[in-house]
Length: 410
Image (cartoon, rainbow, N blue to C red; front, side, top):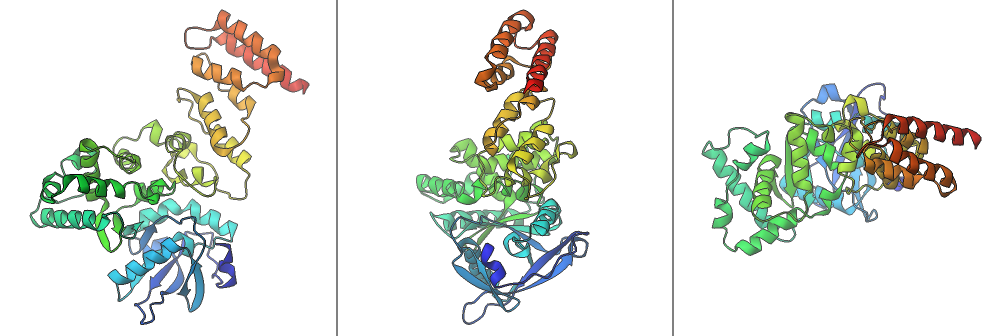
């Protein structure tokens, strides 16, 4: 939102601490204008006292203006739609709301680096997270009305006493009774499926936002439903009808695994990135930065939007988990994602006596054409040293020696 500087000046944050900004949405004005008040504060002072927003920025250009501290501020259509629906639900106003597009000075790279580095803490500290799916469309009002009624019925009857933590508990939380009572089964299936293919689910950032949030609440139009109950319904639908979009269920599995027994797949930054490689972000840096908060301490990378994609690629290769079954293929996949040339020496250093044949062959086909002598030599030596499916220790030593010799000659 590069034009925001023409309208608004931010009060600088204290970047030495976990400072951030919140906004109060003021009561609805007769003229329909959205008016907000923004102020600086600290995480420690606002713990569990504010609401974070998770939503899709969208690619459509800025078309609307709201008022922040009596100054016009440009916003994209989807965020403006959120404010309109929020004002309908809360005409008296809504206090202590955190929205990244507004509360972070997007033109200040230093501040942006700081705020992204504490993004995990922001969503963890929020008392709740509003998940804005967008306005009512394709029967979403019917779906959410159905879920609201069933959730209230189960809560009043004492059948819903706590938020389930595991997939197994989720499966027992929702049954088909409310769906069967709704009538036209085929039409309802399409309505439910339509909620899972909205653009929101394609965002890379929602992985961290939903997984670390304590109390996510889905908001679609003016309807709301707790994340836990909605995912229970989605699990039922996946089992019985099949998903068009697996991401909502994948996100729930990731959230559940964080509470149970995290696996390498969901703790190593590179494995997370590769697992969710189809997710979308405008800035390729966010393919990694959006997941840093979910990764273990051994696979972190520094957040710096000024760094080149080549630099970021090198940092990610350095944190590839050595326990990965195919580290060379992982490194090559990263190069494709970030649209950079792979670092050949980094690929060679992953060779070990336990390297799988798939990794070895991927390495051979990555070697430049002018290295034909090395290519042919390695193939011959593979037959001598290579065990079935792995590289022998003699083969590994020779690969590294040949590469170093060639590299030194260049």
